[in-house]
Image (tube, rainbow, N blue to C red; front, side):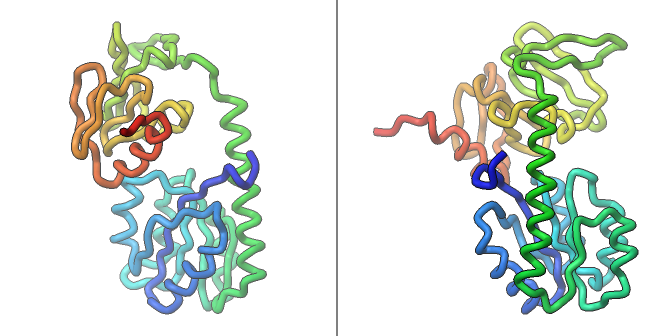
Length: 242
């Protein structure tokens, strides 16, 4: 994947407003970065982590109520972390948490660039690995102690059900022990998209979309506000307007 094709969704968690705005200002020069929000504490950041598929967090270590190091222990492995702090003595502990990098404040532009070079390398390799492993037209899923071969074109939508997902196709439903984020990461991103916290749809199977609902195979599901822009962007290229 070329850098022009790379899109890294990130958030900044930093309790000092000046440092928070300054970092985001520096990051705006990098077109492959997509800022999903700025937060002064970890509680607010958790909300977007539950609704958006993030790639990267710039995480301050000294935060009110919960430290960045403690918060990082609960961040999913699919999300990379670059720590930011004014204290150099936390570097070793940050690397024990598999941080992508560790930036000292005030953050120098050349040092930030080196950290972003690491991010580019990581996400490019991740994209290559996913592309190499991704099936072209089918997946195998385990349901009811059997492996079922399922053509991607057969999948209409996928419904989250706590620790399981229900895969809906034209002829059958399969209950699979997997969360919705995991199965979405195993599907071709060009064909499947999340429309709310509980549903992933096959773009080829969408029958209609309005400001609040998506209809697939006659079934209406809510269009989440935080997922709406992404869905509309995905289908915009196939939209014919007057």
